[in-house]
Length: 208
Image (tube, rainbow, N blue to C red; front, side, top):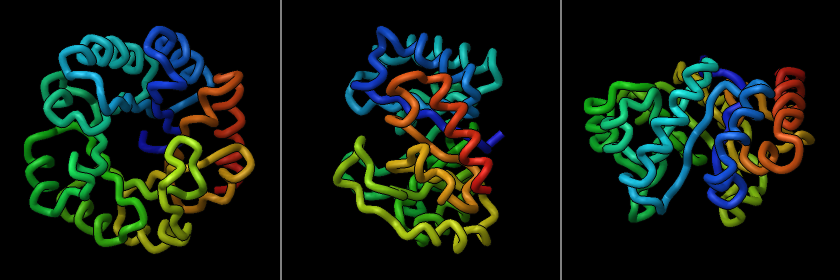
């Protein structure tokens, strides 16, 4: 199931008052994964929303992913957890990744940015997928460095599903080769959500 369009929430583009309806539209469009990404709301406040959205995703065979909330993911038994950098802005080292893998038993994804060594560590500790980006200039993260897209070809030998992220739009998604998943934010949530997902999926498949 780690294949297709991977929708990521955004506290500005997907306000919680509208998120359920927006997610339903994205599900109808054909997303395969949905990640709830929120860096600021306390776990205690976020937990009920996560539980509700987990049920919604499960009912439609969409993988629910919680971003960075390791303890909350364990408590809620979230189907998937995605981790990026620590609070100090540094990536998790191999030992830290090992501890996370030992204590969290769902699908584990790891952001590797443009660092092949991070991807190797993720593979060694038993991550279920790796993510590389930003592939293009990202309106959501304008300061993120773009990466050479050939990293996906290089990382094929690691034997893990790969996710591309960062600035991916309808007009450039076909440039993504070798990645099994494409994570999108602004290109999904602005305008006609269902149509956006359908077109992204169509063009992604064309490029494969």
